Length: 90
Image (tube, rainbow, N blue to C red; front, side, top):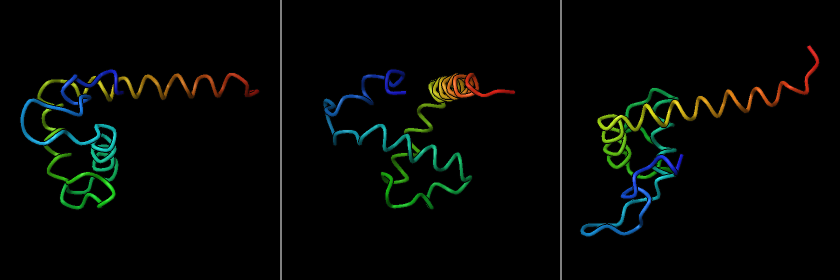
């Protein structure tokens, strides 16, 4: 998934403001909300602040990146399941 993220999300330094939080942790927070259906404010403390995760999610949706990420994850999951079932007798 990291290869799909824009440079600004991968780079620890930006021209101004605070450095961005680890994109993997933010992505995990986003996926937690999508998986559980919980409100953003209920995001557990083990993830970055919910405001950060929500803002990054909204940006990714607006640019079409979220759809690209979810499609790539779906493709990888199907490929992994396919390789697991190759050794199984039916």
